[in-house]
Length: 420
Image (cartoon, rainbow, N blue to C red; front, side, top):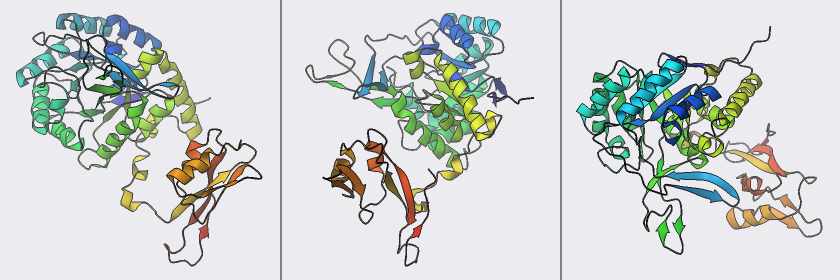
């Protein structure tokens, strides 16, 4: 009998049918949205951040902007929206209804407050509503109150105190959501763990100004002639999310703390990368805003194919496999050089590699006026692979691998072969 790939994961004692969740954001803002996501195949929802009614949410219009690269939209996405705008009782009623109708799906209540007493109270009320776990929003970068959001998440003392306050109000597992607007995420993350956090989620959005209107001299989006710094998400922040999770996995005090990965997950490849650096569950927003909830179907299908290609049957076998292979820069082998190899049948002779190498690298790509094709001068080439990256038709790939002479004590270079 054929063994099927198992995408289910257990996270903080809660079973997820697959690792995919909506992150706390505009895409999980009410009963109708969350119910549609569940029916589409999402295993979990982090319901948009709850707050006590003493904090009044008053949003701006417009509130979104995007960063483009040439003709590619949504490289990055700017959002000026804050937390849930509904009265707390309405959101709690939606949570109760969702849990009643979808008992086998996971509902995580995101919560936020500005004092220990309020953190305890909001935790208590979200717990009573039937949430499966709580996520502390310590990281939203566009709150109008500096007593809430990313300013809190940069303060380890507050992180520890507020986490302890939440634990006093609940028996549920507690996740602390970290801000990337900090040099070392491990410091506040460890403070949250000391306060009782059971897991970490990372990352929230990055403080940004995406674009400036050149005629009106205002950042975008323009709100009655003005703008502000706010959160940046989308594909462009994936490298930042992967970096912070890897650093937490390298920290001896955090290496075994469960992590929910967030930031730029649009495809199954992005999802697999977060799993490989140590995330167990995955949260998505910007991809849903672009493509709708059904994007999860492609990510599920892609992960199943990836598991088959890796010869594994359970998703948990992938978690953290890349951690040991990401090492400090000083430990990398600096005698190892991979030269570019040019496929002349594919090359169109545009000269892009020659220009980029001469103006941005080591002048190793040589242009032949007769053949109108480039070649590589290995005496000058350092194997940076810039030519490979800029080639518009992918005619250049990684080729011969050598160990540079003089760096290993050998008189002659050691020639390997690229296995790429």
